[in-house]
Length: 180
Image: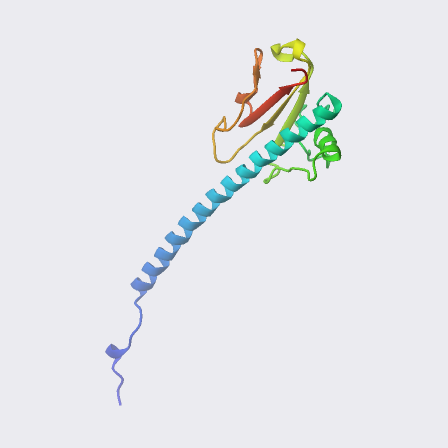
């Protein structure tokens, strides 16, 4: 008895390669979409953390009538980073965490290798960079490296004085004077 190969059913090599190629294209498209969604979620968390920190700064000011000082050895070119790689809590986040924050906000990605990432805070002396000295010292709080927007982020309130515009240094930035 002889078997007839023409009656066997199966896939040719070409058909299998086409199916593999289609699966590869679909999976890469899905992967790219998921990466974009994750980046948007991280940016949304960063903006929520900024709102939480700004509220905490306002509550701190209500209690002490000043904003938290920065550390002499702040880790990001003089800016407190909240928290720095070298210290588990920076002075400004540490002060806020002790008094008003229930949880320490951390950048969702962490370090980008240069040591200056995340949430940056600086308290300037009255009159620095041409700001009105009669309004007292002031803080600047910003986020670098938002993943889904260019500089500035559309929701950034911005902050500048006659001698400096921090909006060009951060994707999202805000500031506030100690005296109104």
